[in-house]
Amino acid sequence: MSYWPFGTEADIGLRVFGSSISSIFRDNHAGMMNIIASDNLLTNEIQQTYSNEFSLSLPIEESGENFDMLLVAFLEEILYRLEVNDQWVYDTRIKVTKNLNEAVCQGILYYIPKELVNTELEIKAITTHLLHITKVDTDQVVSSDNTDVPEFKGPGYYSDMVFDI
Image (cartoon, rainbow, N blue to C red):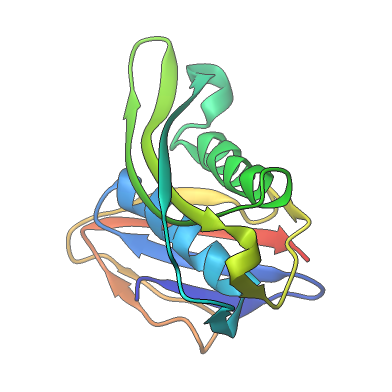
């Protein structure tokens, strides 16, 4: 596991460690879905799964120095699919890149109908409170004030964010 939920005053935070920016996006998605899901995840046996391609982009000046706002847009897309399209996105194959003008997150989302999943919590919004994606140098150690979150030793990246529940 490379994500760890942590409590905040009224919401739920998530710390993620990863080897790349793309893995930070994937594991933030996995951590968010884990927060929403109950321990008894499935209501029925899965008969069929679905997938579709997607692409999100933001102008460089809006994406955040380390793709912070693109991460928010990606997770908002997942929540939108859950709440509006009734799609439980259980896996992603994504790539996050930056060119001269924009930051891009694109790939494939794999999903099942939401009705097949038992949920425990509702995430109302992805916030920018505590939001960051930070590069960790080789042998640099990142610790946390929260005892549920272990230390992480670089190289890699880590992120923190808070979900409004």
